[in-house]
Image (cartoon, helix red, strand yellow):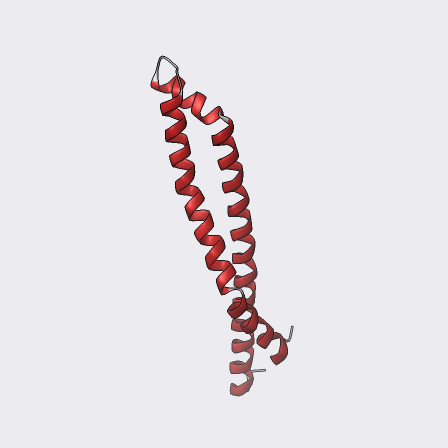
Length: 108
């Protein structure tokens, strides 16, 4: 497998161009993680069960909590996909560097 200089340049460009999207999706995911906890706590306080356990179960079954959990799940999937693309680009660059170093040493 040979990786061309053009492919490496595309990977470098992608890493630069995707940095903002990567940061934004990670921030969204972290925000939703915290917001999910806040929604759960608010729903527990609103619940009218006789025990804390019952209130917790009602809170976690509430529409507000289910919606935030689904939104969080989507943000994790989006972040994970971008992260995987970026890692693939980084790996291609590393393979290219290794191949070029081996070639310079005469090992290839």
